[in-house]
Length: 294
Image (tube, rainbow, N blue to C red):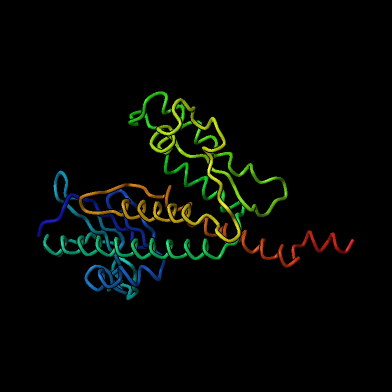
């Protein structure tokens, strides 16, 4: 059996798997769903526990497996856990095990990413108005999707990099459009990026400087149409990023935490913000109650 170059490490006691440099700690439920059917009973059982497993096939194919077995001391009659090195399988069995673990690893990630995408879409759909968190989500999206322009070898000229820096700074300042105490905005203005400026604006406005006029800002309405195309683009970007960075035999990206972690935090913050907005509309905020009772 032939498998592509990869490394797989399993720390079974804390349900952690490292594949291609990407580490994942499984919940007990996910471990039972995705991993237990593969490791039981050959690699792990009630009285013959898997401790760790390591495999690599580049530059040389090799593997190791540490286990511990519940055995009886024939002298004392007591039972104890005895650690040992497990070697009693052929290489083709190991290769099949690695392939199955890799497939389960991908399946669990795919399930989680799909769940995150669904939750994000649900939360965005349920939120009404341009809350501060929603605008911060847009800001993070603009910055994430333009990070490439700040790389040393980015395919942009020195002048274009200046424009991108200006664009990114203005994106960072988007939340500043919320005045102190403001919960929801009816609309917000967003700068066009340098690519839009160069391809769609400059040909019809010869000699215009980047963001030198008000018509280079796009206004997004809030209550009835909160972002629409903006959030569709943001959702597609997140989905694409998650799909591209899924570990695969021939294409490994070591760390996607910069994409996945903010998504989960964003969802939680959006949910908290929406609850506050709903309370504010109903006149139930503690600060409002205190003021009304004074």
